Structure formats: C-alpha cells, structure tokens
Image (tube, rainbow, N blue to C red; front, top):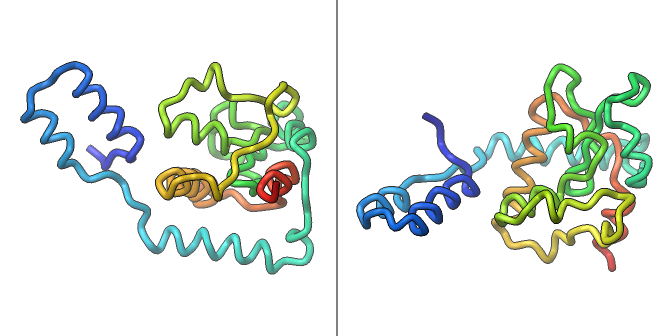
Length: 175
C-alpha cells in the first residue's frame, strides 16, 4: 500500500471514532504517517511558478472564469485547462481529469473536499450565484494551503504548464 493523504487519513480516523472502534485500532490509525510532499517535488513546482512570472509573454496574462470555462476539452480548439490557486494550467492531454475540474477553478472544490464538506451542495460554478468571492489563500490554514499546493503539484508534475492567472481569483485575493 501507499501512504495516505492527510485528508484520507483523517476520514479513516474520524470514521473509526464515529464507529466506536477499539482504542487499539484508533491508536493504530493515529500512528500512521500521511503523505508529505518531497522537497524536490515542491522545489520543482516553485521553479515552474518562478519561470511563469519571469516569462514576459505569460506573466501578465489574466483570464476570466468565463474564458476558462471554454477550455473544458469539449471542442478540440479549446483543450483542457484547469485553474488551481489562481494558476491556469494547460494540462497534459494524455492524462485523464475529473470532468468537474475541466475548464474550472478547483481551489474552492479542493478546500471543500479537504474539509469534509459536500461538493454537491457547495461547489459553485462561475455562472452561479455565490461564485465570488473565490477563497482567499491568506485565510486558509497551513494544512489547507498544503493540500491546495499538492493539487497544483500534481497538475504540473503530470505534464501541465502554467499559461495564465485567473483574474477573478487574483482580484479576490486583494479584497
């Protein structure tokens, strides 16, 4: 087996407590180590972000959520792009992604998932009431930010490239 994410480990721990499992089982679950991003993975992600900001052709590119929504892969002229933490990533076409991620900002969705909230009730699309403001990174806990960054790591390390920033996200960070 692999190493569970902090989110998944917490689900198991909370479920064991709710189900009234024995003290021994709970202690065993509490002793399990969760996935921590290796330094070389994180440093490569940070290098790609720095390259984006150093590139005059990309660094000032801002897309709206409406523009991003066109890039859901349903039209070959608009290949799949996903926004995470305000970075719009053109993802590797050889990989598969959740349909709910395609052409969408996944930051709110990731935070809902990490914090055990219903995605069905709370994942709001750009054209739905309540979409704005988008989550502020400064208001997130360290664990929230780490989970979000792990998702960005995944998009980039699977062959994605940062092509722009999400204007709505950038604007909402400064409100």
